[in-house]
Image 1 (cartoon, rainbow, N blue to C red):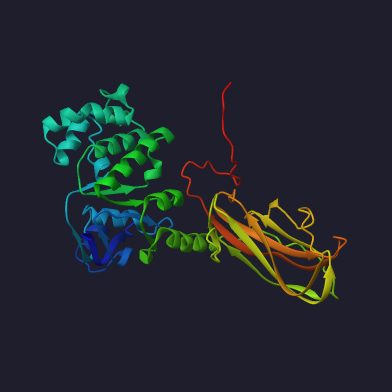
Image 2 (image 1 turned 90 degrees about the vertical axis):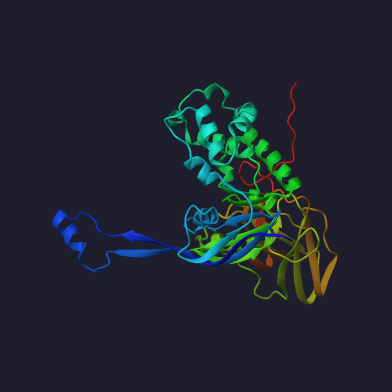
Length: 399
């Protein structure tokens, strides 16, 4: 594979000045003093990685992690304090594109200005002008000065210009903020075209669905440090675990008493994905199996095994059990397992809690219960998901 971007021990520090309100005399005297009245903010801390030609690399992490600074450094908008950035080929950055706009010029003039900044000739711009305008869906604003554009319109215009620039590397910041669903569908078509052409994209996004769908490599940053780089599914899992793990759990465990003389216990509850691999991270609309392992010191008849799934705020989503499903075991003894298979997991992205229980034949006495002691994460690949908790498998029709 051809290496097209390489960062070697890159550190970027910014000065944060603390002068506050000072008199002219104080400012003049400070010129001749060696007192440092600023602190250093480390935005990137010893970052090293490489990107190959054709890679689609997603940069993820919490606010303030250094994601945009990393893009600006790769774009050479800013220079690293320590280390070096090596790139091969032509680079176009959405950050730089927006900054190149002259707000006192019209949309049409800015298209010509930006095109020339990124190496297009006047004749090339004239040939592509109609395509750029139609793609942006801003045909009615061609002769309007850009200072009257909303931030969303400026982003659409910048991306539309980039769409028609032939380059080797694309640097995109927060691509999920560009346009409505219709416009984003056109962006996805463009990304598919870039993949076919073997182009390279490095992008920042807070939406894990986009990262999962678009990238083949993912880099996780936190407080300027690179926590890990690797396959999107694994990197996203680590990130979601860290984010959700720092939030205060709103789930309250209920105090359900169980039979003190019970001779059966829940030994383990585990989760398997659609390829029967044990994990705690799942894709929405893929199969999931919940397995309950038990140990009985005596024989029991007609027991009820059940699970319950709750959202992150402790709301009960579902509570299936073997009795409701008419799957009642005639007798249970020694060790065994009970599996519950969820077909096409209908949950959106988030963290969920699971309870497991065993009840006697009457269904009223808890022989063992583990209340909300287990949890799993769901990652939603569907970038068009509109939130909520449940994904219904439905279709619209008109009559």
